[in-house]
Image (tube, rainbow, N blue to C red):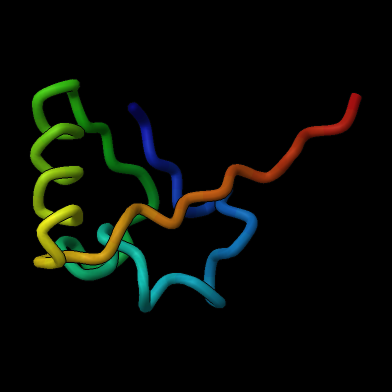
Amino acid sequence: MIIDCDSCEVRGDACKECVITVLLGAPPTVEFDASEQRAIDVLAGAGLVPRLRLLPIEKTA
């Protein structure tokens, strides 16, 4: 999973409630492998960090 904060539709509005901001301070791009994604999901499920709030901007053709 590649998380590109610059292309997030809700950047700014939802940053303070996003796990990326909590853990890393909203870098422009972060890449998680499958085990890292599962770890973030477990932490979020336990209420220790917020969920990933990334909502990619829809590209129109």
